[in-house]
Amino acid sequence: MTTLPLPETPLYNHSLPAIETWLRNLGSIQDIEVLNCWTLQRTDWSAEIELGTDQIVVCYRAAGEAGQDLTRAYKYSLSRADLEAVILGGP
Image (cartoon, rainbow, N blue to C red):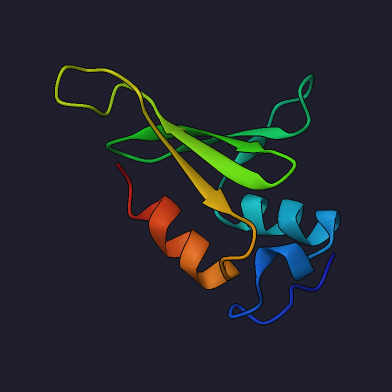
């Protein structure tokens, strides 16, 4: 198992295996065909998480007032703790 850096560490200072471990710890499931895409299912919402080259893109499914998807992008310069808070905070 991969050891994670301190939560205050910017995500760009995490190795890819550490980021993948973190996403698994959040309860995300990796897409078996598109390895940089993950699905996170919660009781009242779900999200697709994409690991891009310079940011993480989170798309909350059918979360808008009219049932549309809500997409947010976060730079890897944010700490893992901050990213976790905004992602798990939901739409």
